[in-house]
Length: 175
Image (cartoon, rainbow, N blue to C red; front, side, top):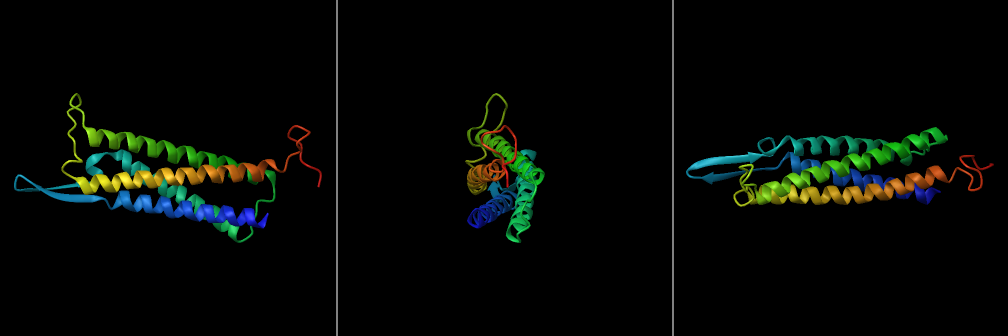
C-alpha cells in the first residue's frame, strides 16, 4: 500500500512538471521576424485564444495534481469511500479536459502548419518556425502528461474499487 501511494505521488509530480512545462512553453512563446522591412512579432494572442485556454487548463490541472500529491505525501490518505470516489471522478475529469484541450490545440496547429485557402488562412510555420516548433513540443508534452494521467486514473480506480467485495454488488469488504 505504501509503494502504491509513493507511485501515485511520483506520477502526480511528473504530471505537474509536464503540465507546467507545457504552460511555460505556450505562455512564453513568441517570435519576431523581419518581413518586407517591418518587424512582425507573433505571440500566443495573435494566433488564437485556443492555446491560451489550453494554458489555463494545464495550470489548473497542475495545481489540482500538486494538491493531491501533497495530500498523498503527508499521509492524509483518503479514509472514506466518498473521498476516494471524489478523487476518482476528479482524476477522470482532469484527463478528459486536458486531452480535449490538447486535441483542439493540435487540430488548430495543423491548420497553422498547412494553412487553408478556403478560409484565407496563411501558413505561418514557414515564416515563424521557432514559434511553431515550440507549440508543437508543448502539444507533445501535453499528450505525454495525458498518458501519465490515464495511468494515474487506473491507480485511482484500483484504490477505489479494492474497497468493494467481488461477490456482492457495491458492498464493502468486511474488515
